[in-house]
Image (cartoon, rainbow, N blue to C red; front, side, top):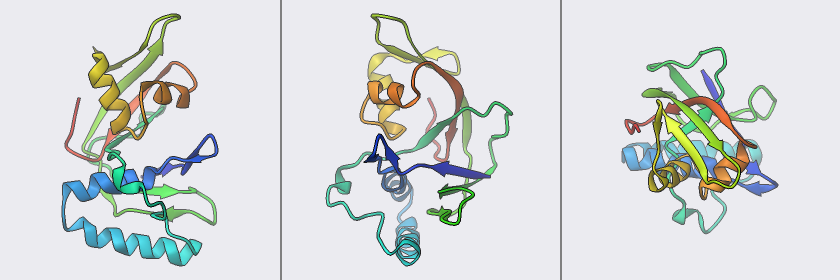
Amino acid sequence: MKLSFGTVIDDQPNYFIEKIWKGLTNLSAHLEKDYYQYLQRHLEKFNRSWDGDQYTEFLEPKIHTIRKDADNLWRQGMEIMMVIDKDTPGEFQFAPVLSCQHIQTISISKVENRPVQASIDGRLLPTAELHQFAVNDGFQDIEALYAYFNGDFKGKLIHWTAFKY
C-alpha cells in the first residue's frame, strides 16, 4: 500500500526522504546502491536532487510514521510503497518496496499547563523516550511533533524496521 510523505512543514523542508533513507542505509549496506538509483530517478523526474542540502549528513533517521488509519487498513507484513505527491502527476516512489514490520497504537495528548504525553500500545512513554520517539518519527522534538498533529491525536505507528516500543 502507498504511504505518502510530505516534503515541507510550515514552508520549511522536513527532510523526511533523507531521514528515511538514513534509517534504511543504517539497516543494510546493500541499500546504499538503491539509494543512488532512487536519487538519480528523482533527479531525472524533477530536475533536482532531494539530497541538495549540505547539512543532511547530521540528520537523525526516521524509522516509522504515524497515521490515523481509521479503517484499520495497515497490517503487519503488508508491502509499503513510500511516495511523495501521491495520486498526482508528480507522484514519486522514493524507496524500494518494504515490508510493514509492526503496527502499534499511539495516543498523543497535552493537558493545559502540563507537558505533552504519548502512549504506545497503552504504555505511557517517559520524557526521554518520548523525545527519542519524536526524533525517530522525523521531528526535532516533542513540541514539534505535537504541533504537527495540531493537538491531541490517536492513530497507528507504522514500522518498516524491526525497532518497536
